[in-house]
Length: 209
Image (cartoon, rainbow, N blue to C red; front, side):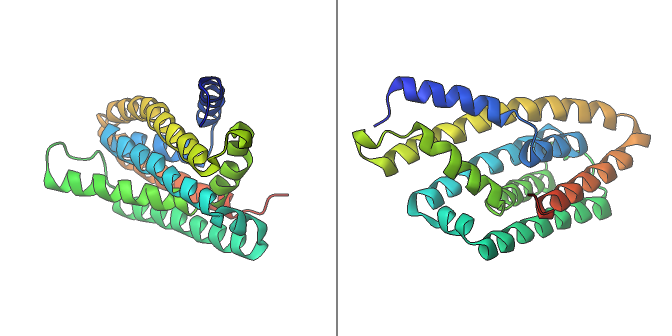
């Protein structure tokens, strides 16, 4: 199994990378600004748990297959891009504001955001590439049990993602709640959030050299 020093080094490096601006953290901020803290925390939980799927894929080798095949990588990338763009269009058309507290409708929206965030994370092949490039640096093959080591790293990364994104979600949600108190800004914020999600989809689809 992994040593304490390995886990400590992995955790420190992970925290730096988690807070690095990217599609996932921007998505959480967008949800918080547009729909409040509950929506942002639902997105946080979805993205964090989605990393368990990528951990499983990395262990069984599916991520390596996707990354090594240009066609498979492109298919997953474009599917993920379309999904993000679709979520953005839905947000613009619905113009939904802050999630209502203590209502069945609010709970349903939270669950929907949670599921959407898992799908958005799983359909981002760049996350699979990140896992394959980052995790092996902290594996000790001499100690054996590489799949268990990968699982330990993945679990640690999920926990760190939840807490780091959670801090961002609370901050973005508080700002969003304050902005929504000014009724003239509510629809503009939601439309802007939808445009951000569409932009994230375009960024994911855009070929990078």
